[in-house]
Image (cartoon, rainbow, N blue to C red):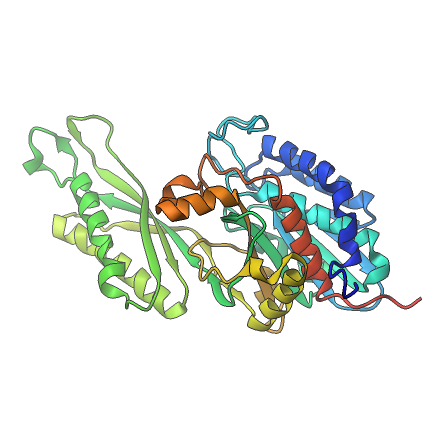
Length: 418
C-alpha cells in the first residue's frame, strides 16, 4: 500500500472477478434454501473455497462450511457469512428471482455468501502480503437463531481454533457503497413466544354460554401495546410485536382456543427481564379477566442474544475500511432492532474475543435520497424480509468484498517471513 494508492494490493484483483461474483450471486438468489437445508449452497461454497486453496470442512453444525487458510504465524481472523433463505414468496420481478415456490433470499444471505467467497479468493491470491490464519464460516440457520450455536456445539473451537477477532457484515437498505457500524449493543436480543389462550367454545348466537378466546386474544394484543409505551423508560428501547393471531374455523362457531405469536426485542438484560415479565403478566391477567378456566400456555419459539460490538474493534476495522472506500461513507447507523446470532462465535470463545459486525448498503443511492427527501423511505425502500427486497448487484458486491478484505487485513499480520 502506498501513499498514492491506499488500496491494499489484495483488492487490486477485484475488478477481474466481479463478473464471476455477480453470476454466482444471481445463481444463489435463484436457488434459495431454508434453514438447515442449505445443501446446494454449501456444496458450491466448498467447491469454490477448495479451489482457492483453503482447507474445507463441510457438515459443521449440520450444514455449515468452514474454510481455513494458514499462512504463517499471526492472528486468527474469523470471517462469517450466513447462508439460509426465508419462507417468503418473491415479488421482485427480477430475471434471476427465486425458482423455489415460497422460498426467497429476502434477507440478503446470498449476497453475504458471495462477498465472503470473493474476499477469500482475493486474500488467498495475496497471501504474500499478510500472515496469520483465516477461518471463514459459512453458517446455516441464522433465520432460525440456531446455526451459530449448532456450529459452536459441533466442537468448533477444538477443531478450528479460537479466533482473535470475529468479523462479519449484513446487507441493509442503506445506500449502496456505504458502511455502517455501531459500537456497543448493536443488534437487539429477540425472544419469540407462542401463547395459547384457552376459552370455552360455543355457538355464535349464544356467546353468554362461552368464554370467547377471540375476544381474550384481541384484548391481550391491545394491552400488550402498553408495555413499551407505559412500562419502559423513554431513554430505553424495546419492541413488542404480535406477528400472528389464529383462532376459529367458521363464522358461527366460538372456538375453544386462540394462538398468538409474539416477537420481543431488547438491548439490555434489565429491560429484557422487565419486558418479558410484563408480557407474561398481561397474558395471564387477560385470561383471568375473561374468566378462563385454564391458564394460558406460553412456550419459547426461539431466542437471539444481543450483538455487542467491541468499540476498539469497531474503530480499528472501520478505519481500515474507510481508508479504502472513503471515511465519509462509513457511518454509525445507531442501534438496529433486528437480531443476529453472529455474536455467539465471539462470546462462546471467551470474553477476550472482540466482535465487529457491520452493515453494508444495498439500496439505490438515488432512490434512497429521493425517498428521504419525500419522507417516504419506510414505504418506498424495501427492507430485509420484504418480498420486494432486492439489493443492487453493484456496487453492493464490490463494497461487501472490499469491506471484508480490508477488515481482515486490519487484523492479520504483515508480510510473512521469507
